[in-house]
Length: 271
Image 1 (cartoon, helix red, strand yellow):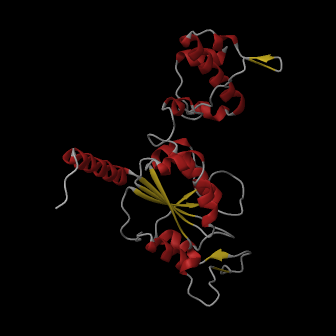
Image 2: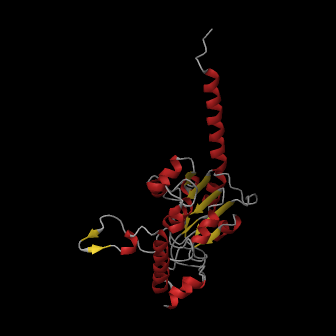
Image 3: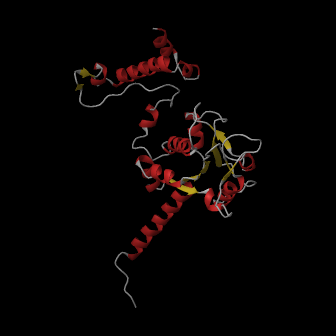
């Protein structure tokens, strides 16, 4: 009969607690899926910087599904010409539907904490408020279009939400999906090194952020604003707020209409 190691109970207790922590992480982990013809593009982006850190830390899980893997014709054809004689090619509905179903997504049984997004210029423009909304979801699935997009029937069948990142045209939906995913993941607790970084971000309070400086204090004859060297935290905070208002008024005055401003802000803007 084998002999128990000293402290065996303690080790077993530690293992139980480790498993409980692992289960807790798994149940609270955000999962992001990309239905894409180019999974290598997604894999490359998600294996770098903060996205890799988030995945390695068990905060988010990234998966891909390629519609081409669900084409069963001789030539594995994923696209076809649009009806009505429109130009270009369109991704067919069935390969996308099969890819979604393979991910466990059923059109008539979509939980409220799961969001399917199709990156498309017809949707509302993505912004920080939408990023914060999506960060509360348990799972996000991106349908990445290509060519002229995706057959509208599968978009409607799976109740996909159209989202645009701006008034311009790209060759694929992977880049917009990656941009949205990055903006969402960085909001999750534990991804950034400091929670204060989120508070200082542009758009976190409806304004653009103030300019920032780092060492050396003097670079090619240019020095930093004196207030940043003062050690007076309240004065620095007032300076940053004033600069934030100033740059927003100059570059994006439209944001001021929705930003949270107080009387002191109004005085700064009117000076």
